[in-house]
Image (tube, rainbow, N blue to C red; front, side):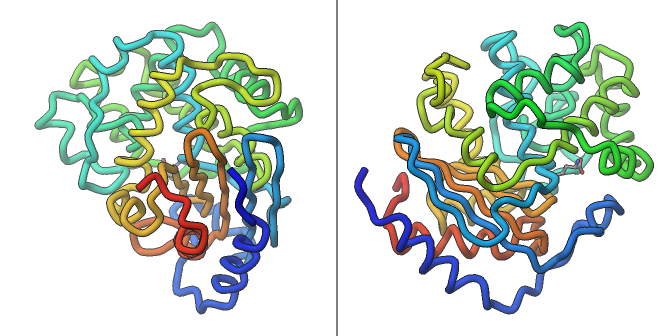
Length: 306
Ligand code: GLU
């Protein structure tokens, strides 16, 4: 696709950068409040390899829930369609860490991106891998071509010490029969997974396989089938932005996933991926500037799946 993406990104970035940001840092994980809140980076990666970034696009940040797409990819690759017997594929309409619907739905989380669903994904990985922590990291290192990629022990420990709601969630699902391993083991892996750090450039490149029908761009290795990739993209579109997924589809018009570290990655199948990061979050938990930037980007470029 021939578009003047550089010009469009510059324009969208310049429009977004000076906006007064009313957002707040996700201080329920104390260590996440220790970042400079004024940072703002964006990075675009075309499937033909061309890329362009601006601002703090080379600063690594905590990708948090964005990692849930990668753990889902690995679990889906390993167990196939059976995964949907344990996790539904509907938006939840509730907060990402809500316990509310689990009781009504007999422990089946509404989708794999709310915390409950991501914990069931972690449980599947703990069951199928000898060392889920290391093997998941190896998987993401290979996918991203980043051999130095690491978990942040500081972030993971901070969340382990304060994640009481997640502890409750995991135990609750266990009581309803949809966690097979020890909750403490599943939670340890869940917190580590969420603590992965990447910058916008790395994030946009890592997600290229989902814009490329499940095939890693740098070496053409099939990570998952095209059909699986379609389904993960559909889940990102419908469930990728907490209780604001409809709003993101409405304003931006691309599948994507956000995290409480302030990162967002979005993609246009067969064309490009784009990442934005700014740590201040809007009331629904999505990066205020990240959302605005992506909205400007698709408005100016007219590159939306709709
Ligand atoms: N580790 C975070 C939590 O469980 C992830 C939340 C997110 O980024 O949505 O609360």
